[in-house]
View: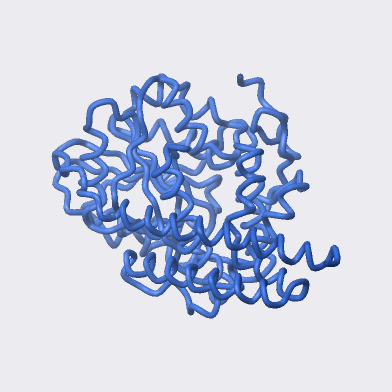
Length: 386
């Protein structure tokens, strides 16, 4: 047997191992969302929603409105923040105020706090406007259901819980490329996170939601402690765990609105995400290459046709099952199923590129990866935070 054939058989074998992983992750997803939800919290506690914004994203007003349309009777404040008064998100926030005249909506327009992480700089600038002691921050591209606040507070009120975060599925709002990114989020990212929760390998905080009390935020150093950290959500979770507290993940699924308009946009997003994961856990990231069962099987076909085709069929059937289950939980079709192999191959390519990449693009800013999970932007020097 030639070296080429041996390579093909090896790739097919890896693809089969990856398919087994995918089947286990499917079981983890189903078990996670079948769990009984935490009893909903009191609907009278005062809450501040922190929404850092950047630009007029597709359906931004609609997404923000979902956070106001809650089955909740307590005081609710929304603080929206932009880097400057000329940001194109500002008119959208002003229109949101007019559409919800009884809502408490504040707007800050900078200047941003110090550091290379612009989102954290935005949050630092927003904090003086936050009125309440329960803080719920979430990315601008999230949409939620009417039971969101009650579920979050129910989890936050449990003993030993320091923060609450949420899983999310993708929704493409800007055409084909955004739908491919949505497919990656729904059909790949969500199952991976569910698997990490099931195995206890991670207790992640995610930008979809980080809910915590002001006292807890102060104990971990405030947002200033994460000014130069790219994966600020993950770092916040680690800091909370260091206090001996847990991060709760209730069994609800939020919506991540994807806005990639081109292959270039999609590639930058996927590479940034993969490089971020590599920076958090290099060895685990390297080992995660095994989960790409379908791309590995497809590569095996020209090298060992029969073994490659067999692995491809098995991998494709299991990946279809994963996609169908996530879409059923989300209550909608994320993307046409024929995009599944396309999405998997793009994510796999970004994984390979992340093994050597050192610079990423974050909303038009070039960030260089530095030691200790920090980043350096051209217009900022790295801070001396520990």
